[in-house]
Length: 566
Ligand code: ATP
Ligand code: MG
Ligand code: MG
Ligand code: MG
Image (cartoon, rainbow, N blue to C red; front, side, top):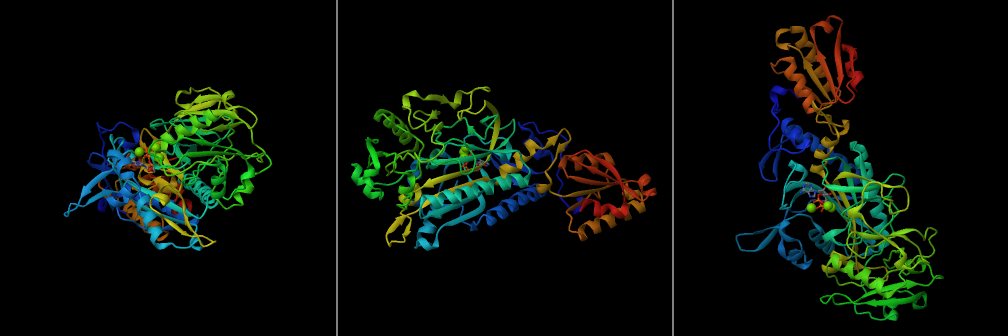
């Protein structure tokens, strides 16, 4: 690419209305331009970066067995009424009407659309598991769009949705996605942390967020200095011990409609009722059709007995000796996820070797129990309110002390369970020929937000320092006063052609500008490698190489330039 045939769109002045460094640099380096509040145009340099991020995301999703599709941005309102989110979602959901006065929404997320698709296209357990994803525009009418494309109203998300016959299969895909996300952020070259997250209005029990650590982050992340424990301090329903893949084994919600006795629940879940020590029927909220049920398994019955029943149950490392504690626990859990047509069995896996010293579910928003083990009474447990933690507090997993850093949420994965499949009646014929409602997971990545997060982590006073994997160009050719020197022009043209021939993405600054202007622009844009062509070095058949990331400068022989870069 030649700068004279390109839209560089760099700016000298620091824009007054930009608060954070990434926003300032995105405007100055010609990455984006604001059209209106929360709406941005991607300029050519920005789009090159964005496409690279998307390509890495796509590649890792494909490698992890996900299948790409594309769903409409505009979605009919009746799907949202079916899932009840028409009422629940609030003003972030932009509602529009067509010429026939029919209601539509601009999709902030696609659970409803994809669940409808799978309901219509998939009929047998043999077609499962299935993980569908898209990389596509979302719209959320954010109350406070800010920091440029970091929190915009229109943005690009990679959203994936997986469908399963049982919880075990969901758990497997969830771990695969967790790993795919780690691969993505590592490949892009970001410092990130997976953290335990609140599953919020989307429903479901198990959830992790991926945060890029940066001072401008809007979230506080508490993490242990001596273990993998990390959690978002906004956490309202902490239910697991740490954020390592495979480490979280939590309660899941399972439908046992109408059941009010241990025998009925056990029958519906295909559990031998003699395996249960006791069952506690807990009153649900008024508008819920079924009560919650908590089951405590006998010590000699292991989780495997239940797994063998092929029911999507996952163990909770929770021992609740007192009925009131269970009520308190479930009452709040219920309150925070909204009315659902579900019962909640709680199983205790006594077989697990580590069945002690757990961190367990909150019975108040933002709180969770620490040091839980089977033998101890719930009332003994220390309650931690993560919202009030300060650096140096003991880590809830009992290992080391907590540090707190700001994080930018760039990804979020959830085990949804059957929240959407139940509401929208998405099921298949199971192996035994019965209709079975599917288990679902969903997995989001903020593709546009990653670009801003990458700048927050990689910049200096001169501008952006793109990680190599997402740099808009690999090399800049900066010829000094080329328009006055035939041999400089000739060398530049030759190198330019050679780079193109070698498949290197090169930006050739062929403007009639002073060298200082060119240097500043190329530094601002953050191209990793620069080749500076000047008279003096040409006398020795050399050019100057500059590395934007390390600051390294060295002279290279002209005929070795391509080999040096590639
Ligand atoms: P946030 O807490 O920042 O509002 P969220 O939890 O509402 O994000 P999710 O529903 O989990 O977002 O969506 C998946 C991903 O989409 C997020 O992890 C984030 O990277 C990205 N994202 C969400 N909202 C925006 C936005 N307004 N602008 C840019 N990216 C966003
Ligand atoms: Mg949000
Ligand atoms: Mg969030
Ligand atoms: Mg989120």
